[in-house]
Amino acid sequence: MSDPVPVAAGTLHLEPPTAVDRVAQELRRAIFDGDLESGTALREVALAASLGVSRPTVREALTLLVAEGLATREPHRGVSVATPEAASVRDICAARWVLEGAGVRAWPQADAALRRQVRTTLEAYTTAVHAGGSYQELNEQHLAFHLSLVALADSPRLVHMAEQLVTELKLALAQVERLRRNAHDEADNHTRLVLLLESGDVDAAHEFLRDHLAGAADEIITALALEPES
Image 1 (cartoon, rainbow, N blue to C red):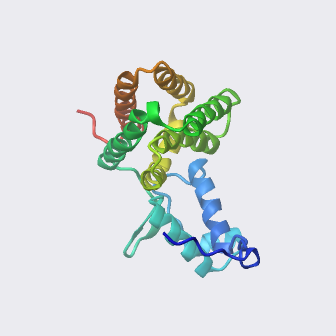
Image 2 (image 1 turned 90 degrees about the horizontal axis):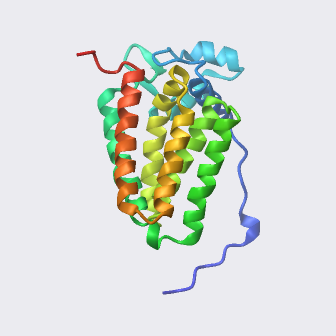
Image 3 (image 1 turned 90 degrees about the vertical axis):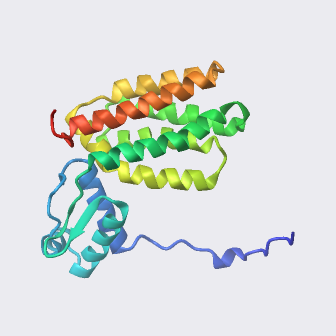
């Protein structure tokens, strides 16, 4: 295998965020904080005037949100904040169990640094919960913990797949947090999962994770009334 070609440090640089990036980030914040509810129309003219940017800039930012699953675009109706669907929520949580379960199974052989990252993200989440963090902060810390479980498998591709699933789920999770503040229960569940791993009972941790994610899907669907009552 040939040695990698060195890259001159002078050729590396970071581009500052563009106007499109800034608009997209502000819209994400508004969605996750509840300023823009599911189904809210995202009108280019109104957003351009409110944010002090051009319509093409807003249009590009909305295209990013559509690609992330945070917004939907319909012919003749324009773009609106996405509304989670029950089938999608269940599918995402089932896929997460496959990925996170692989990480949990890998715990005994996982690198010490990866196991330490699980503990670190758990501590960050529980700290944010007890400090009364914002919905967006809790969302980010919560999902960072679950991504750290996937990382135990030491596969960048699995982590990338999990990150895509997390992006799709963020909208629903943010709304659940607004409808029913359950972060303390979530923190307790995550702590129990890590304690099972630390004790060496990987099978119990794997089953606990399965039940936890299935319960999360049911909770999201119930809280957002995504299925008709029987």
